[in-house]
Amino acid sequence: QVFINLVPDHVIFHRMYPVSADRTIVECDWLYLPHVVESGKDVSRSVELFDRVNLQDFEACERTQPGMSSRLYAKGGVLVPSEHHIGAFHDWVNERLGIAQGSATARLGGRTRSL
Image (cartoon, rainbow, N blue to C red; front, side, top):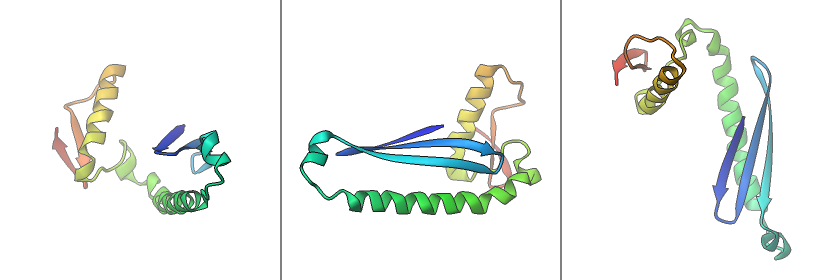
């Protein structure tokens, strides 16, 4: 898995290596253009900010992980109403893969809603 964050003067490149069902190694690189590095610009604030965001995201993932064995996640989890586009994307992928499904629905906040 790769996640790329584009910022005006640099790119943050996240690589995720699943080790097991409940463990992933994440490596992050901050890539600056040569002229930014050569200028001597202090980039530590940007690195510290994204490091803090990453740590908060990792903590949220770790708190969520124990619930992944719940019956609610048996069919892909529960999406909150603001995540309806994720359910639509799942349906789109399943349709392209030829995976049978009833109607295009997403589970939103424990409810099923037609899209």
